[in-house]
Image (cartoon, rainbow, N blue to C red; front, top):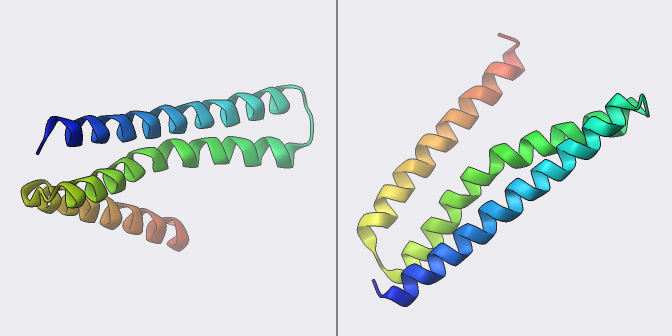
Length: 104
């Protein structure tokens, strides 16, 4: 792994985290203002939900970007580690969705 590869990974991850948090914060802030103003409940709820989903998706996207970059760097130890982390995330999300659908 070269310094350039590590630098590129850090830049990509920094951009992703920065964008995800700012987008989430904007959706949450606008949704909260609409909700507090008593405006249409539908758009306020949609923005609040979108903000939370974006906030929860950001770490998952970070793992995906890391995986792609580690494959490009041919760092197989970190590829394997990142695949395991991604697998745990997928299992967790799948179990949460199944639990929500079953109503328990």
